[in-house]
Amino acid sequence: MLPDPPAPEPTPQVGVVVIGYNDAAHVADAVHSALGQGPAVAEVVAVDDCSTDGSAELLARLAAEEPRLRVVRREVNSGGCGSPRNTGIDAVTTPYVMFLDSDDVLPPGAVDALLAAATRADAEVASGLCVRRELPSGSEQPWQEPLYAAHTVLAQPAQRPRLVHDTLCVNKLYRTDFLRGHDIRFPEGRFLYEDIVFTARVLAATPRMALVPDLVYVWHVRRSAERLSLSLDRGRIDNWKARTEACALAYDILLGAGQKELARATRAKFLDHEVRMYARELGLRDAHYQRAWWAHTREYLARYDAADWELNPTAPGRLLARVVLESPEPSDLPRLKELAARPARLLPPYARVPDGTPVWSTDLPQVTLTPFLTRPPRQLPLAVDGELRPRARGTRLCLRLHELYGRMAEAGPQEVEVEWQHRESGRTAQRATAAFTPSGEDGWSAEVSVDLAALGAGTWDLGLTVRFTDGTCRDVTAHALTGAGRLSRRAVPNVRHGVLLVQPYATHSGALALRVATGIRGVMTIAGGRLRRLLH
Image 1 (cartoon, rainbow, N blue to C red):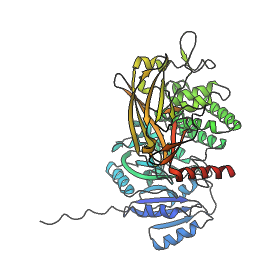
Image 2 (cartoon, rainbow, N blue to C red):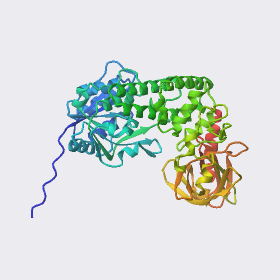
Image 3 (tube, rainbow, N blue to C red):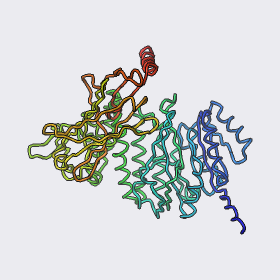
Image 4 (tube, rainbow, N blue to C red):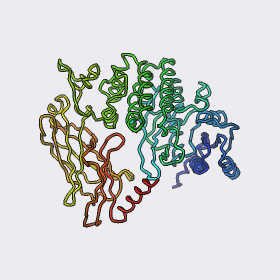
């Protein structure tokens, strides 16, 4: 019996556009990851945005050894990512095109997965899963994972309004003649968040789309880099103004193309994603930034109409935005930070007006919370306080679930499941379950023991699952209680390690987390680092 003939190699049909500026440390890895995709990649077009660090020379040396690599050097730096990508669109000669940033990589098989999906479905756009990889830890977080749970073909984007949340251009394969035929371009020059506008233009052209569950892009996040990426540099008010400008343009593009449902979804995404992300960090900014952010956000939200507010009125971002819109000055920032967390936490006080209607506060009675009275518990922004009490003879985690307009008593909190997750590795440890017991008229309490030595060194995030008597549950995080030394660093004697240095702390969103250092060496490392920071 003759052996089966080998499978035919993919026809070279894809051009990968790699853009970079002064990134000689990483651009070669990006190029190699594109070339390493195999024969489906006919060409890699490296667009150098007038670098001054030797990137162009490095690319030229690579091109001399690799016939599939072409280097295009722009004569003037554009100040952004849109112009070099447009240069790449003009330069490619292939039926399909992808985009790759110089500090990211394409994982093996990415192009084959997208090309197979696009050709099989006759789709103008094929899209796959991207992960954000934190460096140097290597921990990964999927981007918009629910969109890519299974192979899906959409005759048009309106069949999946959630697509407006995936504003990345880099986890997608585009038919080149589709982009050129519809004159779909990136904003030119120094335009931040150009992906948001480009994606709106793509969706407005109603492409046939194929979605695949395969990993097709690795987005490297370097928060300690000397020069932060544009998406991470959120400490200036100009960044927020650029973000709102991009979102406004996306809405106008979709509405102008008659895509009303997608346009509405874009406004909803702004509340759920952009507003929440920046509100979580608002307490870290100075008073001048806070006032400017508040004023600009109110001005932007004033464009929303009644239908925008009626959609899912209990969504945390929607409630947060209503508070901003109704309050002329920054207010309730700590409480808004908790509401902006994921999952959201609505902290007390739970105010009512004289007729019994639940409201945000007595100062903002016009922001009503009536929808909370009918939503199922799994959709409510539950508030659980958490306090870690490290002791030599045993550390206890004390939790308190707050009542929420009578909804908790109605649902019957039964127990809480506790889980610790290692920040760097993603490893989970010490799952435990504790029963809730009534604690006064407005809450329930539970306690679990924590074996700090078994957890080991590192940063640990706390995850909770509240279970109710009817079998439903709600995943939450714990609000870190502050004051009275609750978050102070402590040295705890330990048989296994000699000593443990324990630091409960509040994350940027107010959640309780934990740092542990083990042994004398670990303690000295932490102490030395703190001393260096103080001296600096």
